[in-house]
Image 1: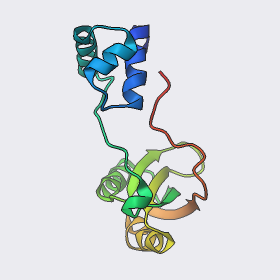
Image 2 (image 1 turned 90 degrees about the vertical axis):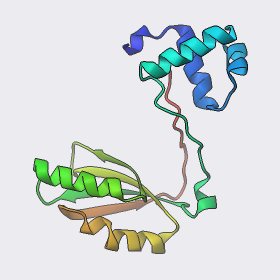
Image 3 (image 1 turned 135 degrees about the vertical axis):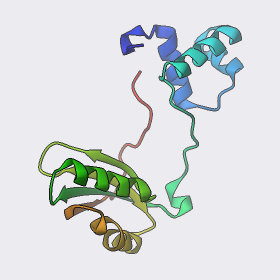
Image 4 (image 1 turned 180 degrees about the vertical axis):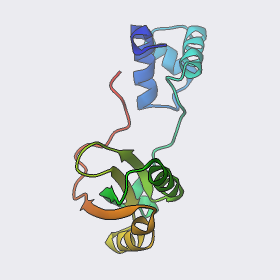
Length: 155
């Protein structure tokens, strides 16, 4: 089901669900001007077709000792399939890393990580990140202010 296959009602359902994944079916139906049965069927279809990947609780990073947000540019020593694969496996094992993206440009990967503070980041950098397979160079950017942080996609 391509993005263009979504009708206005599907888009409205997705917008409301992104804002509140715990909304009841009855309240979702009310907000989207549908019957509860039609709402249930549409949401089920959206899940089955892969539009809705899952539901999560968003946590306050500061309250769970993950207040410091860091972005890291990573340059690998070689750009071969094996190095990419080994690096990706190591990244998946590091709980501090929230996101890791292979990018085009002056470096190979962009990592988004959360740690307690700068001391914790220093430990993460020295004990984990630079020891990952293929890492030749890193550049760190500590976030001073989160101007916008959302997981809601425009629908």
